[in-house]
Image (tube, rainbow, N blue to C red; front, side, top):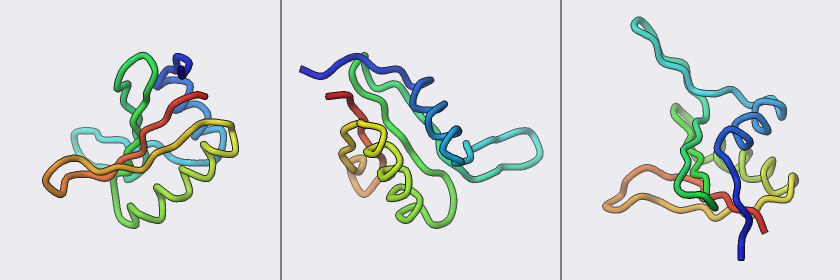
Length: 88
């Protein structure tokens, strides 16, 4: 059974690894990653911006080297790509 993880922990790990979070304000948008708590044992990671596939691969490498299990997936009907992250 997997252990509980928090989106905030994944967010901090990726920032510490040099990755930039996505930011939106009233006047502009900056590409980057974002995390979303899927449930108590899974966090989803998305990349917003150009080079999505390459950026998700870099995020996968970072997360796996930190000991997380990462499963790439895609939302239904050709939707957004994401990484499903769990702890062993």
